[in-house]
Image (cartoon, rainbow over all chains, first blue to last red; front, top):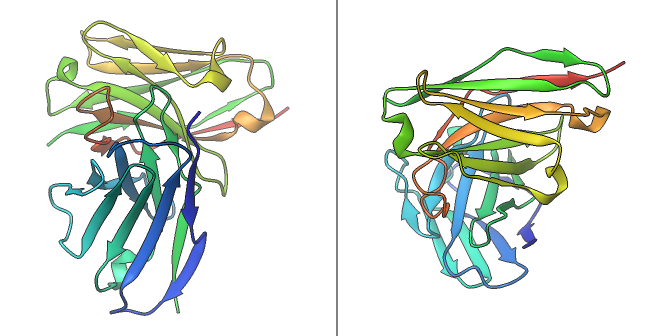
Length: 107
Length: 121
């Protein structure tokens, strides 16, 4: 299976901060990389697909980049509703896998 | 607006089976695949597999091979996930999700509300 490693596992940030989360694949996955946001007790929500494409309805402060093995999710100006856990997911192989998650907390 | 509504919480004994349903509405059921993801308490997301709704092709996570079966009923636009020989570490919230492509390239764009399955003696 392709292993997905996110860093950091958690971070503390303030409203208005720029936040970057990294996801690294154990082998090249081209741009078959999706990002999800999950709030406590809720289903995940798709933010970014194909590494850099913004899902309909997702605010433009979210952006994704990368290709191959290294990817980033950036929140340009953190808003109160953005405090959540973020997961990357690869679908390059037939066996999809998620990263372990990054929890974004209020500083 | 697409919607996926899952069946209610279940409590099962070790060794038993559980079957979770996921009823789709608001879109053409057979135009999208359905994937299943689970989340143990306090843990991350674990992909379980997907099923193509137009012909029933499946792809399962290796660790669940032999214990999981995904099916669909196109007459009711419902997908099912059955997990057998339940163990305590199968205790989790189980989610279904809609996939525009089985390549996963476009992500899973709509999700069910989740079904808590508790395995306990």
